[in-house]
Image 1 (spheres, rainbow, N blue to C red):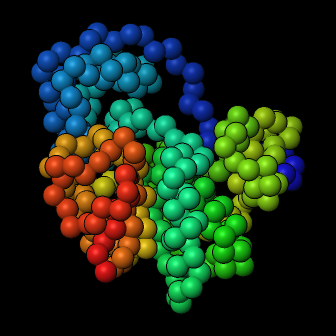
Image 2: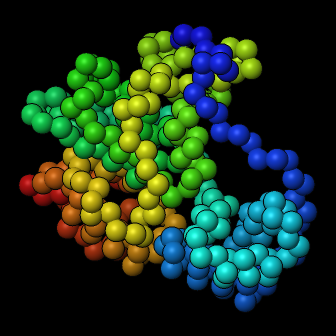
Amino acid sequence: MNGISRRTAAPRVADPPAVEAQPARLVSGSEFAEIRDLAYRTFGLDLKRGKEALVTARLSKRLAALGLGTIGEYLEILRRDRTGAELTSLIDALATNHTSFQREPQHFELLRTRILPAIAASSGRTGIWSAGCSTGEEPYTILMHAADALGEQHLAKLRLLATDISNKALAEARAGIYPLDKLADLPAEWRKRFLQKGVGDLKGSFRIRPDLVSKVEFSRLNLMEPFENAGTFRVIFCRNVMIYFDKRTQEQLVRRFTARLEPGGWLLIGHSEGLMGVKNDLEYVMPAVYRRPV
């Protein structure tokens, strides 16, 4: 891995000022109902009853950052917000951005053995969408597999879209800088080819090569909003996102994903998810893998 220093590194996401978050009073029933309704209407997030303590803990830091004492005061800010900025901060606080390189490796085996060979044999440009890309490990894993299978000189054949609702997660994804301990699941040869090791004040971290970062189209997208202009795709990765949605929202989203898939295109979801009881027009291939009929 080529060495990098702070001088040559991509901009790193700045940590927010240290604020000591005091434990907030447990959210009341009416406050939880308002937050739950707002999260569902705006983001499709289905906050189950019994999550009051979780919501309180997640919002405590945001209250401290704003100098607020109660969740009631925070709700008043949300009600007055006309820009949507605080709504974005709300989803940043409530969302879980847990991901890793090579997560659920069966999908990447499918990518290498069936999807990428078909792309290599096709003419024109082919789209792959990482929907709910979080901090970027998923789209970069896709890109590294594609570079390895197709050859970097052919990456222009691939349009790789990566979207997430969280601005904070997307900023980290665009920077492409990760702690060294996230390397465990990447082959050593890939580390040398695709990564640059941090030195100096970046020691202990690594970044994706900037020329590879530039091949990923990062964009903020709330999946509850229209995405008809996103284009069409050979494969859509939407993994461990729909677990936060109820069946009605899942059905609506799968139907909209299907409309964005090419005939024969693939939808890959998380192994903890499933479309049992979710009406859809896709063919079941294997656990967590579905395909639009040709």
